[in-house]
Length: 496
Image 1 (cartoon, rainbow, N blue to C red):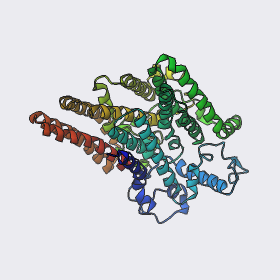
Image 2 (tube, rainbow, N blue to C red):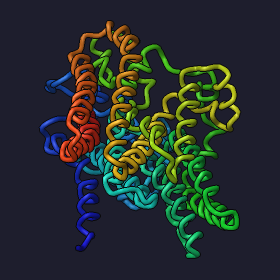
Image 3 (cartoon, one colour):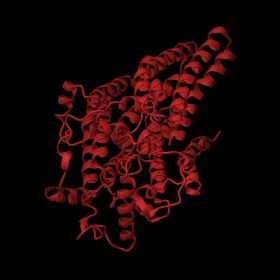
Image 4 (spheres, one colour):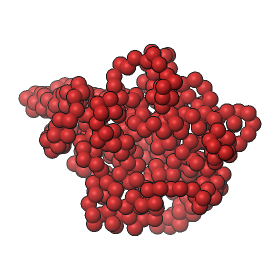
């Protein structure tokens, strides 16, 4: 039987899903355009379905990405490189400012079109999903695990809540890791090449125009690629490192217009508080917001309620971590030894120590601050994309391993998942409800109901598998277990 449709159909779904999710905006049924918020008194006659801001929590989505990005796109289309912004005072650097992604071809050209902010986000989501899918195939994960990984990376918490600079480098985290795996596979199979994806990932991360996200993602990718290098036989390692190194150098050369202009502008620029973020950490309520995405209402809901504390909370978040995703990721550590056993512990250590840094644990913060440029990065905000990617990778390993297990082990591990899920929920609930007491949004009730329904779902499925030992009942429960992945993906799309 030809297996090509099995590959092409998931790829088609990954391409279409982001555009389907944004279809109401593209058809004009809903308005996600940040100009209607950032243009001030010039916009009238707009009625709001919900309070807050749709699809972005930072006004830079309109003031920087939409306005300056649109100007950069028009300059490209007129045959000029967008070095200069003539509309601010006597003039300001445009490409050197970086956050507007002026040199991020071809994506920046989408901002010249109507609904440009939505189109560029959807295009980046598609690229992220395809790169994650390719990474899964390179890791030889099962097709369901690859599809799951692609969809979850497309609809990450950062994509759901951001519409400006921080989302631009997101596709290049899975692409860079995929490139590292490709290089290792090529060397081990005594083939040439494999390095092109590394070059494209390095260049794309820098040209995307948001160094903080690119740097944080690069550190995680470096850790995973280092693990992959040491998984190879000793006599292959030098060749792998050499190929990755020269691929990275080539990527830096291709992106030189972006980082060189940025570096030349820094000495004459005001960096403000960006000079030192060493002691910055989560605000009160940030942890609850990460686990219960709409506990405080829609994004920037506090602006309409007159609560500046809630506005500050939204402005200092980089995304959310779905409890369902956290559960599947935690299950990876309950699975018997696999070829990715040591990778699980590497990702687990990354999650634990970076979370401690974000929470402000003093000793851990001081140690991580020794890494160059970390003190100049708002770590607790821009670590979120890496958390989502690490959890998604762990969850994909869980799904891949689970599909090869015997039914008796599936049932016990599924119960373990219910226990982990319930413990995570209950440990977060007290703090979440306390912080939510300052708001009055129906989204709180919806979010809490969703997670409690998850607990009952686990209990019901385990009860069925325990009471009925027949193989057909196990098959029934296994199909429902796979539905957990579908439900999690659907929840991510709904939040976006």
